Length: 242
Image: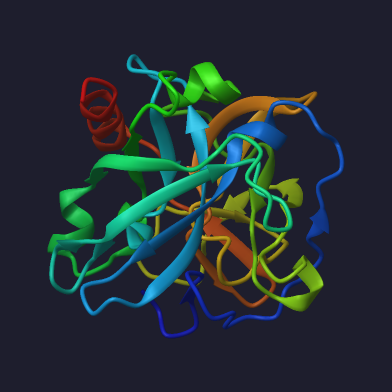
């Protein structure tokens, strides 16, 4: 990860640029949610995630750095997803993860952001799966790049509502030119700490679309997502069968 790029987990490290509160309702308002977890030393952190359609109806897409410590390969614990979180309210309850799936190359490279995606499989709540409860977004792999995309997350800056509301960015995506070897794409907007893992969606209309990546790193006034290729597809299939 280049020194100029910062991962957006907990403390806001970059100034938020142009995200706005999402007021459009629709499927994204129930399928986007806030994540909390603890690391090995017991510190609590926040991220974002989105429900992805899957065979077991229980999968969310998030960032690799929201599920595993790339330096040690140790998965985080007490991992929960709160769909539709707003101002402390948990309208659909709190779903706990039964398993976390991260890309092995994210750990083997000690955190190369090209591999900074992950999936979490959530337990049922009140006898219902996550997707039965709130719905699910589509997800696409090896999809066309350079399109108009939308991103959603729970950034922690004051401008974003201090992590208490869902924020939205949109723009035409472009390749990450700032990091040698990068295969990431991004837009001219930044959501800050806590937005990591939030969904990037293409073909977005009426609150629904196809997940094509997750918020991973920011540089300057831009935020970037890893692309979901064959490795991500394999990981997603494993999560959907878990």
